[in-house]
Length: 208
Ligand code: NI
Image 1 (cartoon, rainbow, N blue to C red):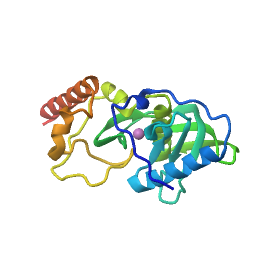
Image 2 (cartoon, rainbow, N blue to C red):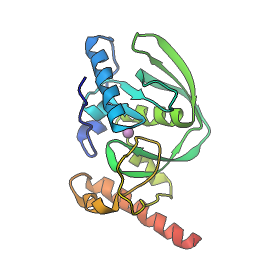
Image 3 (tube, helix red, strand yellow):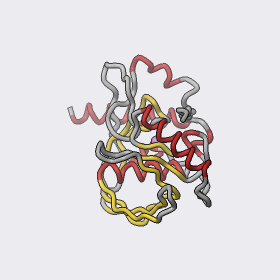
């Protein structure tokens, strides 16, 4: 079971819409196994197939220590309610993190790897992960949600050794700040992030 390379922004595959899975075959099961290993290795919360270069509607999530790594095939949000602001990151943005608006609760349906139809009510990190990963399957990234909010905190001085998909802290690894201007980020994404950072600083000054 190989660990797959995780594509990083602005790889164009991350912007493509994944296609519904029509048959759960050996190939899909192998993909799920590899994605699970990859997510485990990256110590992330969730991974969508786009992130490993496969345009199929499947993601793997582990949103709590008690939970198994779970594959969600053709996941779809049926209902969402409430709003909250949460800190979020993404394995495709290794050094970034920001605050995005998410729902409090989501009801979703999906197929499990045996093809069983499942409906779940999710909250907390699982609802956040479902929204984040289903976004991925639609070519939407968490930075797309940054524009609307006004808080984005900068990273501390310490270098970051682990980044978690969704979950946990930290924005910019200052030691690698140059990457901000490197090929990793498109002009548009970069400008958005810079703007958000500037706004965060302005807010801090006002509040302070
Ligand atoms: Ni992500």
